Image: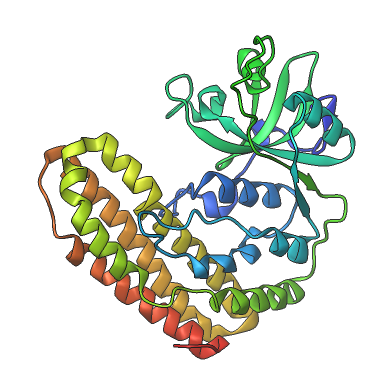
Length: 331
């Protein structure tokens, strides 16, 4: 049953089936909150999320964390005809959501996972964590809203609705509104597979030019090896914070790149397939490192970070060499 303001009236949370990128067979069924909501939203709109993922080729180790990878808004416009603009939240968020849904635009907003019932297994009513959702439907009288978050399409109501929109709370001059965006979908288009692949290949070539100048996994291994004693002293909590900003982002990004190349290769250049396998190896290595690190944090016993990351560095190098050979640019 659709809600009074519903831009996707044919979509019900109970009927939601996630894209294969969010399937249980993935190393990382959830990538990061922003990338995941775009996978889910494009899938719901009947568009192919795999086409947008070429930007992950430029993911890098940023000194103390890996790139928090997000699809470039220009790519979304070119591939799908979807326009995203920042919202100035100058009045209550609910007023903006009401206005833009009425105008045919979805609203993306940062939110506190403490009030998001889809996180029942992790943060819901347990931990205040910033994340991002896309609101597609609203029922103000019934105090309900539907939203995309991580791998799901969900509905919240009651106190969760009130807290999401800060209803009934006294004015707080110290409160800073969350970041929000307006997502216009009225001009979206679904090109044929050949056209979409050609556009995606051109975008991949452009993003490849911005790949790291050296092997980021070698830098990651050195930095992580230096930090390992402190991480082990901090226990599982410190390790999980490091892992989310570090190895988890790297693994998820290169799983996305592998999936993108597997989708692209048969349509554009079959010789890209070995690169897909190389980056899939990076993803698997990151997952193994995550489990090894968690065991070390639990037991306090160190392990050889260089040995754990070395095969990932080799796989990254091999994949990039294939892409450079096929798409041009430095090797």
